[in-house]
Image (cartoon, rainbow, N blue to C red):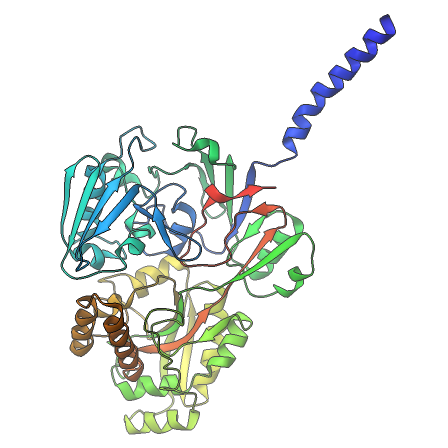
Length: 497
């Protein structure tokens, strides 16, 4: 009797001890790698894509949600309708939603967020979109009506971007360091220069559907260190990882390699407010000096498709303009001579941290040298690049730079008088207004083709390539996106199998 009881007791004790071990077998936390650290955590007041990579759909939510295939689905808005001329949209809001600080989400918060983005001193990267709103009405707590100055068929998509995040009015001013949203995660800790930790919010409306209780985001800029962190198991996933060394992961059974398309445009930006870069012949000379294939092979290991304008293959109305300014070093020399430029022409080349920019910059400088242009490379940190090169109304202190514009539907940027490229063309501005006042798809498609041809002819920038973004993921981690319609990491969909 005693022996039997002992065996039963020991068996029960063993089973009880094993339960936590079995439960721990399925992880509920993840470590993700990112190349760049965000300068802050408010995506409505700064342009850095790294902010969205941390916060979009995690801390903050938007009225709509952009899915992996580029489609749009409801998020904070349960539904919406558009007027026939696509100038008025009515959104029905989700009920019972609250912010992290306990305040209710309602139409007043949406109206506040949109109007805040449009004020004169707004630093929202899509300020022009919100300034195109004629009026934002909140007829009741669950309804928002947006009236636009022109037709906008892409509004549901645009309102799913990080710049359209809905913020809580009383906490908005401190969101840069103390973000408050309606999303499934809250900021746990931010160790500057190292990592950010997000913790699952227990009061989220669909908390039971969120599988990860903690996400740690480590900032690893060095390409070799990115690869090492994955191989050692220190990082479980690295979206948009360096293109160097991707091949070695394809045969490793511990990893899944995802290579996705994008709507991004990697360009050599040219400051057209600087002489002699204001001369279209000089800009065409720069473009003629660029061998796109060599840039794609050398800067991103072949992960790119050549482009000839500020637009990408697969988008509505796309036309191939790569033949407008083809690689032709001899033509580049002739164009410089026609423009009266004495060679060697010395210009600055200011490069942000991403590997595609730093590696591409070395290749670009070598290509330009062959036609008599000496590009002096200056490597700067991301915050410096944003303030010195890109910031609206900033000094725009550069001649050339290399950057990837990751947002789709951003032709409007080229109509903004303070945009960092310095392209101010009344003919293009008029054409863009025609595009936006044409609601039918066929007519809009034709006009978009005209816009691309104009930008290519004007050599607005050195249009390089549409990047493909490789992502390396631990084999058992599911829900990580392959395609990249915009920069985001939707942790609500991630889980361990």
